[in-house]
Image (cartoon, one colour):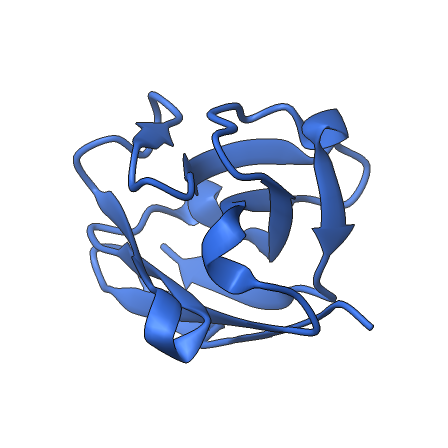
Length: 123
């Protein structure tokens, strides 16, 4: 069974940092692209950043230069370092897995999803 465990969310003041983790199990982690998405109630889920199986990355414009994605395949983990956080970054953040060479922030391309971790940035 494919499973994800996201962690690292919480409450932080604007300008602060958080590091999210996504641990996958039940599949060959290195063979999958991993994306981070976020969703605010009443809004569509939006892609934040992704990293594919060969380490290529793609960032949404609003987070480029502030967020950094990385992966440790030996630990089946993807990290999202979020710096210079803004109130508009407040959302539930989800990780998802897609085919190995995928570079896309379209949610429809991802096959497996985690349950999410909440990030709240206060002004």
